[in-house]
Length: 361
Image (cartoon, rainbow, N blue to C red; front, side):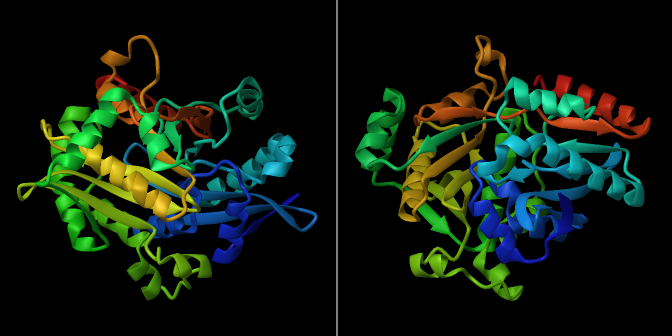
């Protein structure tokens, strides 16, 4: 096996189409987003006898608490060769260690896209990794199979969720709008900042949100000379991202930024005001219907709180119950893993551990 850097988008995206486990965090456009944000990236491919069998997007993260290499939801491994996971991770780690010497980083962090089970946990332990004090991307997600009729999807929802969607549909003053306009990120951000305190999470900046939207928009791809695949052109889904806005009597009550990638829709960013009007429920239903229209087979609600007996005490309890109300299933990955390379890592560890405790997570 050997590692090569991949510079061709078509090779990258075509390989990911063959992977069973993946999220948009592995997409070519997420790498472009990282570059817009000023981060250095590597797109690494693992080859076995000239066959590409695994890939990993690697990001150099510079933070005040320390600099590290990060692999978000990776590495991605071709579905047919999962029995080589251990060997793939070993050779990838060798390359990452080479990069760390050149880039002077204090640790390597991987957010695995591997199912949480004893076998996969042992792979990382064998390579001297340890559980990270925090996660940067979801380790537990809630997903919905949308290869069903609208009637079936509604029937399988929680009774309250289904009722609130129907109430929203009956309200002539509640409108759901779709936008491809970068300017509307500012409307989303206004709602987003008001949501932060209620759900106790660290917000992204307006600049971050705008850059994320730009990286997945058709306008951005056109400026970069990135060709739109034939399948997208035929379906009319040039944009891989849309802003959904719920407006009631001229006031915006809820919004979401949805990423559509490789037949999966991701509810990555959401915001809402506390209101008796079921704006958030109707908005989610409209995003699900849009995902179906685009040919998506899965709707990924993104992260949820641990489903345990004391869920009500978790800061994300309300949001988790909201997502679960639409039906679906949980998917749990191996916890985020750290490989310390310097004593500086422990300063980062203490800072992140303190922040986690302070947020009640």
